[in-house]
Image 1 (cartoon, one colour):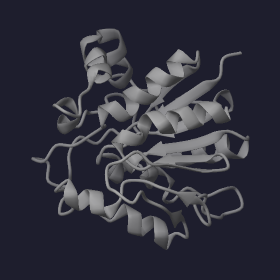
Image 2 (spheres, rainbow, N blue to C red; image 1 turned 60 degrees about the vertical axis):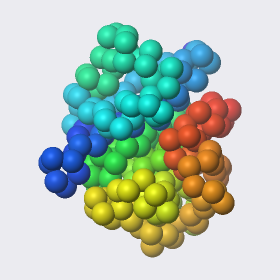
Image 3 (cartoon, rainbow, N blue to C red; image 1 turned 135 degrees about the vertical axis):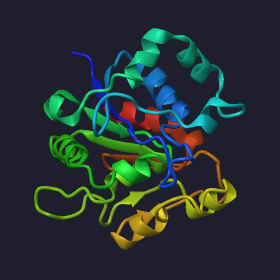
Image 4 (cartoon, helix red, strand yellow; image 1 turned 120 degrees about the horizontal axis):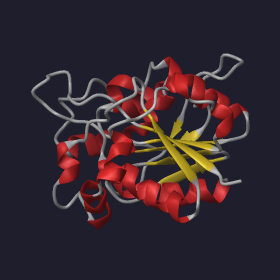
Length: 227
């Protein structure tokens, strides 16, 4: 039977100010999807509310939109996957070997406290599956608790978009919180690369996290190796 990966994406298309758009960072989804597809894995896409996952406009422009992202944008069949995402209550966690949280600043708003996301994460983890994220996707791990009431991230090595990267990207005044700091406050053993924006992946057992958009391919490769 083919291994199965569940992609979790955002439904949020703007910052607190509705005039400032954000959303899913496309390459973080596409790069992982392509790697899993090449390995023959079955994949499904889910979001907190189901339906459309808005795309971060900056991820659609040079140099962020590479050849693989452009192929996706040109393929209406593939594009449908992020326009018609499933809801968490439509998903049986027992059918999946891994869950993968994509980033983009939209996830900072709808990932941390979504009960459906937390249920799927907990159930996949406790059944022996892989929990993974890239960039801001780790915001989906901030408040997820295991069945014993402990935070999944407590005492675990992980990475995700750093505060330095927020500043260098010019969005530190737009974001609702400092995700790096929030992770540390929850007892996570946060790590980052010596230089911003370079690929960096941290593996702690069945928890796999990538720091930034450039880490998506390496993160997916690590997830594939584990499952």
